[in-house]
Length: 262
Ligand SMILES: [Zn+2]
Picture (cartoon, rainbow, N blue to C red):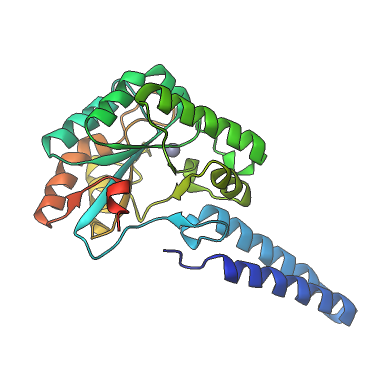
């Protein structure tokens, strides 16, 4: 599932360190290269954090098997007592299942919405206790404590403990990876993003983006609530057309655990 993976990352680390040592020993004419290599290496690290599909610091699930006609619709940043039920009603009308990555603070305010998700057969993962955009930079102990609060909130509302974690913005650092490993969580990213959370994204644009990547094994990133405030994500209006087209293409909407079965 990972396009790059950890071995190349470790090899790049060793190669960069060896090259810098060699250039420093070689003397003044090549010293500028000794500076350029660490800069390029820092760029590689940042790319690894921002593009979880690279799998540089941990295994990240970003698509499912292509041999079954299934897709996984995923919704982040809820639950919201106003917008999430609209998504749930649209999914129910199409007999579709999805996965919700919920925020702990919102879940504690709307536990009945979590119960409705679970009762309808949807999967629930966690997205952090608050939408901390710098979560991947936090100390692993702080990170793990927040995730534990998020897990406990879902468990208190539904009676089960999630095993899936999508970090805010999808950023996966070595610290994110360590905290997820400590809590036994599977990291999840996406293969298609709707960008439905942006104010400039219309329902038509979100639909177009999703449909362009709608193929077997797709994991689609959408939102059932605004990150902050009460603006409706474009996916709420886009979802009926997306579900219709998935059906027309013979693609079944399943939860991530269903998609990952062997
Ligand atoms: Zn989010």
